[in-house]
Figure 1 (cartoon, rainbow, N blue to C red):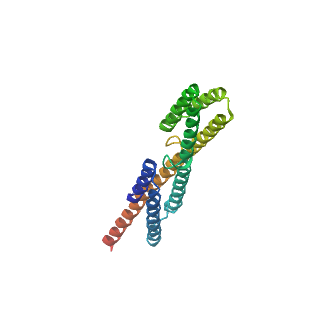
Figure 2: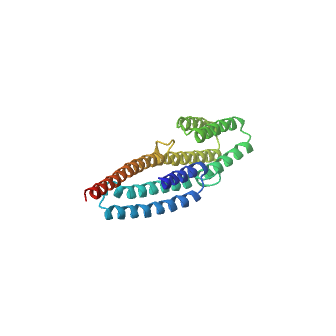
Figure 3: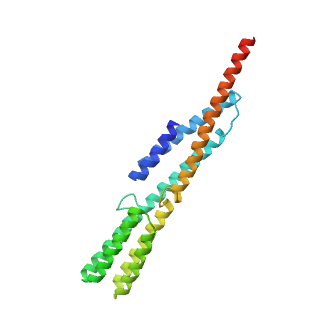
Amino acid sequence: EVLMLQLRRAEKDFVLRQDIKYLTSFDATVNKISLLISSLKNGLINTDIPMGKTSSIGPDINTYQNTFKQLVDESLVKGLDKNSGSYGKLRNATHELETFLASVNNLQAQVYLLTLRRYEKDFMLRNDEKYVAELIAVAQRLDGLLTDTRSKQLLATYLFEFKSFVTTSKKIGLDFTSGIQGDLRTVIHIVEEDLTTEIQRINQHVEDKRSSNQLISILV
């Protein structure tokens, strides 16, 4: 149970701090759990206690580990900071569009761009898809305003990078019940339930054997 709490802590620390070091600590804890489960299985066999759900806890832990790695991988694609991954590409595309519109002194276009940025930040802060639709609608109005090829290309690049960022965000999960985050919640719930059940079951078997041995000792 202590090791499971360590796994959960590593997972939450990664989500909060976006630091790859927590994958290393997660994997190290999984290795410790695997050794304990192997030892537990041997103990159950040697004491003639049924295996129960113990045999499924190991594979479920591996599923949890693989799902967490998927979360880390997609987070790397999204960007662990403002300069990396899809986030970094989006910032670069935004900067290029801002710089160009400022250079041609298109004030109306710059106002639209500020609105785009507001919806972009709203999506990042709130993970609400309604801001995606709002941003795309404003981008369409901005595209209709632009007349030169270069600004249209830069806007198209910005939209592409924003949509890529949204796609990866949705893969990860816009909340703790969707995407990979939702998968993590499901598998950890299964592991925790099975672990609780097995602890109670094994303790009961041990107590039953102790009572049985005491009874035999009294009878003898």
